[in-house]
Image (tube, rainbow, N blue to C red):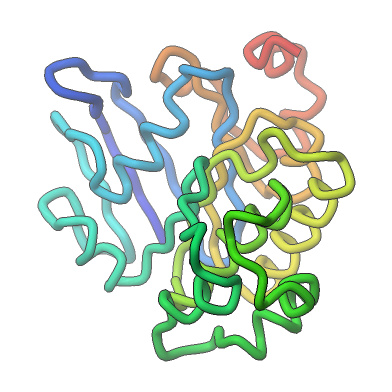
Length: 228
């Protein structure tokens, strides 16, 4: 088991957002968190990374409890976080954004440029001058340069054109083929249907539905919970 969450209550300040959440990510699979804005998807991702307050419950990575570890220790253990607001360095070039995150392991500049040749083409362009799609590719690539063993993707397709969404889907599938487990927060049901093995559907901080992605795609309750 890559990630196991049990009985998780987490939130901000004194206000819990997540209520008794249970979730698993197995090695080599892509698991989607589905839900509308405000359902708790981002809070759950941040709880795994140690960025919000946990009131109770367990977050275990490869059998090790994370609850009392700071964010940097979780990153050192192999968690890689791709935030929904990207947070690239606008005054650094693409190449510099990548190199600043580099750690020893599978992923290096050569491998990143093989996976995402567009980044090679624009490697000397500053991050602040990139399109939204290019910034998203760079954000994912920068996280890969840390050589994570579990990838946490928060709303990677939000606001992107359909062609860019297809490129993100290709990227996620290639990473899945490499055996990298991924926890993916998304609202785009078509996209998650392409890439995810299983999914959990959140509403007001609780898991309302869970199951194989192929089955959930055909359930009317899922569309209703996503307000599609």
